[in-house]
Image 1 (spheres, rainbow, N blue to C red):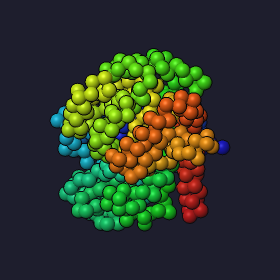
Image 2: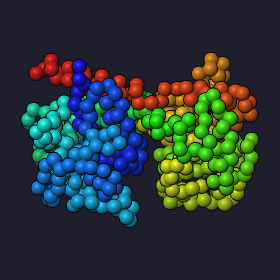
Image 3: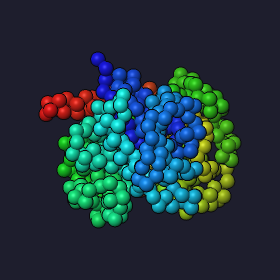
Image 4: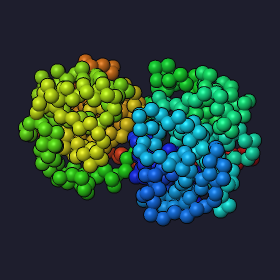
Length: 487
């Protein structure tokens, strides 16, 4: 039996374009679903970086008036993905960041740019393409949030819709004066509609109109129904709790595999962990750290932002230095935090090193050489860094929130005795609790045999996409079954 046909709608898609975890998930999930017989086509804006990478595309149909400009819908295949590309230069023909202008501010027409993405998704869902019509439209994050709204508001037969929230903090709010410009009926500007505190809320619209809502871990699904994590949307999410599901993300186990990773100076497996020593030495040289094989080397691969708890890490640095740890920081973010980490590196030469940009090969090398990976987030819908850490034997030290709580088993005494521990959790999310978790890790690191067991346990965990893909496929089937019962 063939599986359902799914239109996946996202503003980024690895390896074509990526700014964070959304791109990783949008790129990996369709391939995993394909293994289960689910046919996925991926609708994506035609940024220059995307069009340059495509080896072969075919025009499907013209788009003579896409929110005030002309464009084309293209089809192609790349990296195992079946693609539908919106070639609309007036919206997407801009080099650089997909959402931000060169001065770091949002593009002023982001409302129209991503309304066009949702609008076209809805048109495809209702038969725009003569030879392919999806059974399900699956929208990702606020950039695709209007797709379920356009479909529900059309008054025409439509496929069921799913909205996946990757981070509730990013909501896509725009002035109410844009209703006509965005092809939204004025009647939709209501609490039971697209209105959100006097603005048009793209994510809020998706949450209200989608038939099912998913987010990227069960704990985060519970957290976002509370005022502490709900970002003003907790009431709506509580009202839709019976339609809300948490499904933990996976990672691409081919891209992230220490046995075959071309970025590592020395490849290794859970059976040959001794090979990590040369990777650690390479990492120490790369970050200007002292060549000390015994020093616990902590890695950070992160946006340097308040959400990620980077200010807490700065507050903990004196304590970490007193423990004899080394710290390697890779990432970009808030300028004040970047400068603070650079200042800390100057104040602690040989103990703290920073590379303030994103380098994908170096991210792999950090996972392959660091003793532990720090993820002290204040909130974390799922998190992929800790999953990469498990896969590479870089023991995660994480705050007990969201997907971090769902994916890491704390190395308390009972878990160590039972052989199920995979890392260290801490709560509450404070400097003191972070210091305590690192202290426990440093103490355990002195017992090399026990540390190796902890690494090997993490490396045997299922962190790929197979389980998540099965859950999504079942969600699609349940939606179609419910639709068949009511039609």
